[in-house]
Length: 196
Image (cartoon, helix red, strand yellow):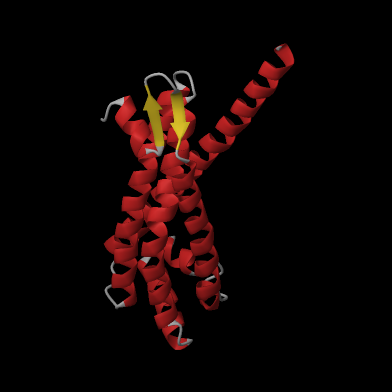
């Protein structure tokens, strides 16, 4: 576990001895912009993957929880000539991973610096949870590529589902922490203005 000042620096937040906390908003803005662009690109590029058996597109494959369901999804995309679309969508997701992961990591780091315990430690854990989500996403994508290439097993499907579920849970918790922290800091600033 890195020391706090090392963690803050990695999160795009630098601490100076006599100047408190200074956020590198340029880094966070780049991660945010990349996240928005990649989400839009993935949605547009992956739209043909949505169908009766795959209402969530590529996410339907991510959250498939049985070998038969995974085989059905892959075969339906092959029948509809969307196999290359699915493969390209997964490869694009590899580019998306660092943008959303480091965006969440940086924001959790920024907010945890300004929180008292135990919220500070919660923010640190969720920031590193964002890095774990990135790793889970990478392995999940590799497993989905194997499924697309016909290597479909019950164990592989279960691990893909498990990694995907854990990834989405960590992302959700990080977003909730960021949202609540933003509200808390806003209320704190408004209260400080009223008392002055």
